[in-house]
Image (cartoon, rainbow, N blue to C red; front, side, top):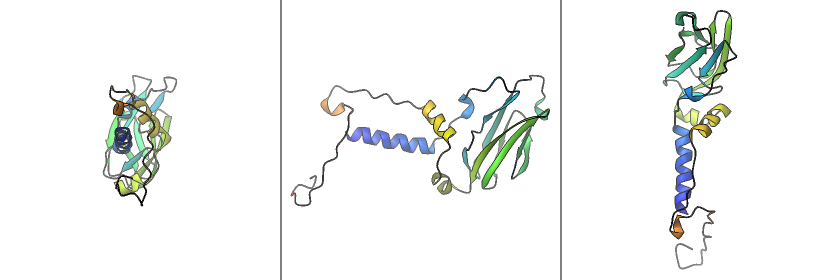
Length: 164
């Protein structure tokens, strides 16, 4: 079944290059301050925009009171939701603070896509992909449209047929 192998390869490629919205993760309602985005250990490229989003349980908090900082770059901005780019390569501990409460998350910033793709995705990135994608294996009506294991032919150099 060449189709199943091609579909699996396409899924792996898509999973590697997709940038999905992290806002689909449930927030912890017991915490006064929760980081919704980015994910722990998430990977970014230096010129890529990084969305920083927090939820604050106290609805009377003014957005200007919420401060985002990076252990590498210093103050990143103010607000429940901001976007930053051009963070220098390295590991950044990103912290959001308001009224003495704070939460932090570590992210990985890479100089280019080549460096990013050579590193392992974080468990949180993989969990996001598992939640956002599902594969439904449906058998077709024809014999060659059935999903099953595929045993590739063994190449025989002595065979006059190129496929064997």
